[in-house]
Length: 296
Image (cartoon, rainbow, N blue to C red; front, side):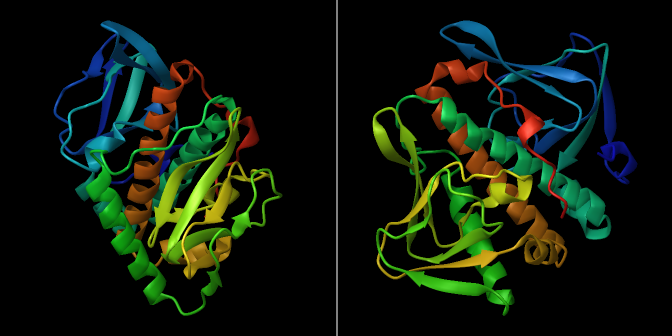
């Protein structure tokens, strides 16, 4: 993996010593996320009146991503866990500016974001009881709607997309099915993402026009982690392979940013729903051994 520091050109880099507070839960987000160039950080959250560690992140990972999406208080406290931590502070403006002349940076950020999404989706295997993510009442709902609108515009720019019309209850693919190396975009209608929990198959996330799914194909997973089922009549979807997806990304920095934002939003909402349903997930992480960094 090429170190991010060798890719960055115009993004500010800061250092923290062990034990230093990078930010606290409830702080203003200031429109930025942090990418870890070196070292490790601990992520803590107040639960039942006590501060509990919910994650430990290292080089090549990022945190504080909600701050780049909406003006929303920080949802956790982050502390420097190693002797020195080097961070790149990335705002929406710096993301777009860097992506406009540095495609290596843009593709690197998308690749890392897709890996993170795959880790979240793989957590489904450890949850015992079914749940449904509540998007309608989530603070990121408006961002989800905006993402969909921009993603539909992407499809309208491409003439080589393969689109298909599906009847209600048709499965696009089954949980555990061998990966077809395709990812999908909903053009019209509705798709239910479903997983088999101890109490049977439950739909955990609903998708609409402008939503992507099946993107873990880019991480080298051999099996689909969930089923995708058509939930409305006359549902239309299009499929991408990795080569076409890469060309789409490289066509416009704004497209890169919106796909980045789409994946981060989906991952954040799903991860929160999993943690609420199964608190044990706050201390469990998914190994990267089964994942590869997407080559876009």
